[in-house]
Image (cartoon, rainbow, N blue to C red; front, side):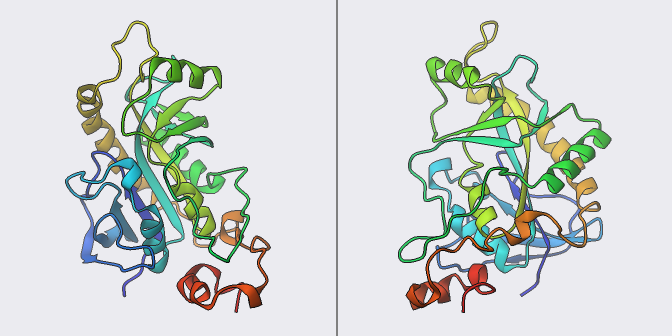
Length: 287
């Protein structure tokens, strides 16, 4: 099967990338079911890229129903070492305007109904997640966004809510009191799973609205979100063309060895079926 070192997970509005050469579609089977859709492999600016639409073509999968484990496992199986996530978010700060871009560096997890680890069932691993985004990839995204002429904020905390409903006003004001910058529904458990899979992960978070806290704005509506998406998506595509040419050939960040010393279960006590199913992730540490 063909491989790519760079993966792109497209969020709302980003269902394909124009300009890909040598394109082929692959359907990957995983121990966790099927990914959101077929993965498109192609060359962008001379670099091999694997593109996966997070919600599936036609936007048919809700945030809670996303097959996140299958998505990350499938990209890992194709050789992906770097994942660029593109996501639509709401702003929780006055200075973060709709149509701005945020490169977040922290999370607050408010999800409730999602499996957020590859491990369990007889295999325990505790992976460090204090810095949830790859600093190397985040820096590349920020510099590329500036070069592309986007209004971009470097850093910020993203609240990840369950959805699919938007926040109540009470929740929105609570999240603002925590100092969070943006709110979205899809970056978790994606980022946690990417870390467990030792994949570098960072996000282009495009602001579509002011959530529902802003006194001079109406509460967020899907009409506002969809109206602001086209410009954000076009800028994301422009940034991606810059980013793929800046990816280092060798990884020296901690993401690449996140599982080292994290697997607590003694090898002889790990069920054989888990050793087989998760060999792609743990094979270099567990025999």
